[in-house]
Image (tube, rainbow, N blue to C red; front, side, top):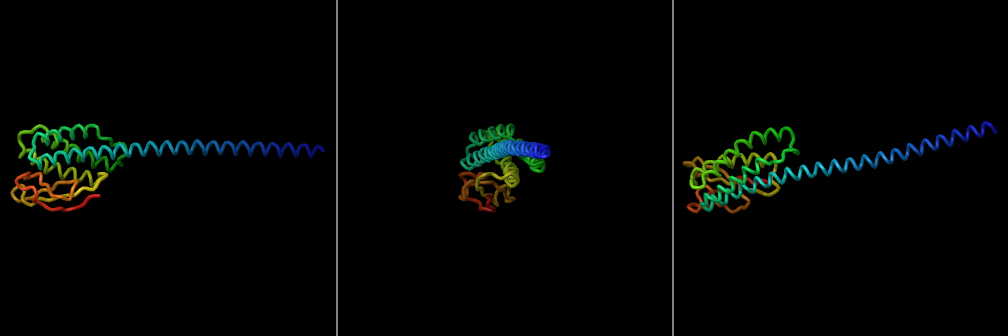
Length: 194
């Protein structure tokens, strides 16, 4: 009888320990899942914030492009000023180390060109010079970070004494920002960016 009581005590102790371990594991899994969900949600929010920052820069770039295509230096200046503000608040938190380096290399130069466009509303030829380099910078940015939309890299062979220049467009239709209304259809699509 003594052995039976000891045996039952051991069995009950083992079952109680297993039950506590089982509850603890279930609780740990629940907490772990909640932690993973919170981490995934935070990562998605950060990624969405970075994507929104890129879209905002591209939007201001297109604002400048469309204004120059319409020979509107004042509106191009507004786009340049807005782009400078967007660079200042760009969310880099979801970028990889390599993307951050590329962004840093591009953003300083692009911001400077956007500033020049923004400060020279009455000098459209000067704005177009800066737009040419800004277009290269934004192209590199989109190639590195994406844009969240389809863009077309267009090419005008006649700009800059026939040296040519590229720009990005949101439409397949050529609307040349370098010659504006003087030669609106001058150019061709060079690349489609997804």
